[in-house]
Length: 157
Image (cartoon, rainbow, N blue to C red):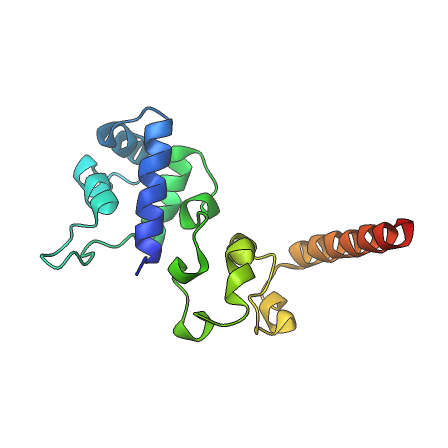
């Protein structure tokens, strides 16, 4: 099963390569922003997972590392946490696997991570209780605009 660290590791490697950076160059960028503990060896271990004989990941990505690597790679952390995956490969609790909602889940997963949409079955009000007020207001305006466009589209057709 794919883990969050597997997704992040794949994305870190992909973005690092797109930027034309070696592991050592990325490590230097991390040092430059105050994370000298992320060495070239650390980058390599994060990307490979330092797997055991059974192929299980032994090296996971910490939140601090994820944030530092995102800054060093000049991307939003969400872009290191998610990539398009088939629903069966999303690292979700077992209750969602095989559920009727799973088919569309891959499409809303990024919105969930970005704090913009609750997952199916979640209480949307509870989900938004920890959002800063300005985010909540921005999302409320976006939702109202989507609803308005949808209604106009229905009435035009």
